[in-house]
Image (cartoon, rainbow, N blue to C red; front, side, top):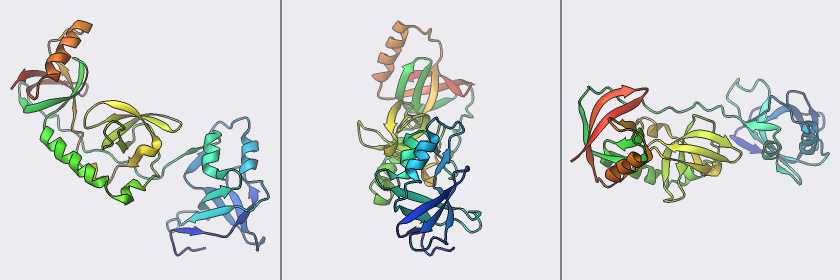
Length: 285
């Protein structure tokens, strides 16, 4: 069957058969002899079936009630005769969301993961990397993040601010988070969108790290969007660094933080690269 539009909303339908592979047949109310082999779009069954698996499956499908379905058009030759769809069930609502909440299925994504361009860390020993660097995030003298070109970061963020004004971008709420995946995330403190990397996922919350600043926080999944390709061509704008010559202790860490945070900008000298972290020296401008 061909569809002339991407999303086609049909008349109410009923479920006739459910198979062990979580595929099912749907038939129109007025034609029980016609059916389509279907699957819920964007989800898959957990490998470990929960105790109430059949109970929740029956609640979603074996209702003997009229349901509403939205069919998604597959690429030519890509569906193997199985149609992806969204299903609305009386008293339950969206079947996929219900089954996710009951730990029957989990979300999956078929979209290609976006990757950032690699950071250029091909510096020579004793090279002055920047004379206008700023500290973007600090944890310890052995773990902090520096922006070597803060004006460039400012211009890049202005581009993201313009993107955030586009209703089409704001309405794309189909991002499916997974560990290591890149995205755009809105921060509650300033309501701005930042490029981020997903570090952990728990229900409808994710822990992310900001690739422009180095800090991390927890964000609701509804506040994430996919990262457009044109914003992935720029490497992360904050470099993870370690200060040379500091003995790590609570007192020295506090002193280091107070000194660096008060600097409007500073020079950075590269010493060497250790496990992807820049060992540097910082001096006042």
